[in-house]
Amino acid sequence: MPERAPYGHTSWGQVLRFIDEHITEVGYPPSIAQIRDAVGVSSTSTIAHHMEFLVARKYITKVPGQPRTLVITGKGRELLDRKASCPE
Image (cartoon, rainbow, N blue to C red; front, top):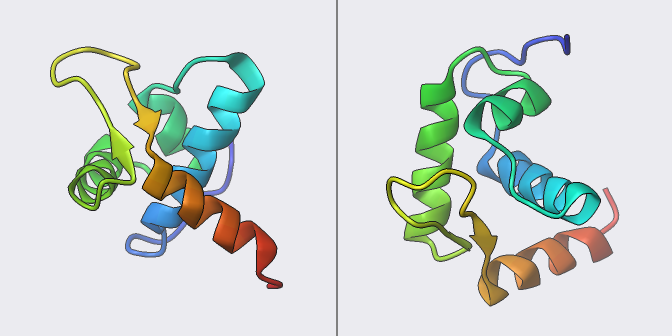
């Protein structure tokens, strides 16, 4: 199991990046629990808040009440592409 990040240190950018990687690798979106484990937090509530932020900013869309319906929007794709081209 990955080491847990301190509360507040997981960014919505990490969540967006993991969603993208998971869809690319397996062909469908991850569950909230999979996102939680991948970014190293203990609470699915934290992930839900990050996802609400991503939906509000139109980086992802999802069908309410339906599992695994996450889609990265054109705006989200542009953000991921921009971040990938920036040196760290």
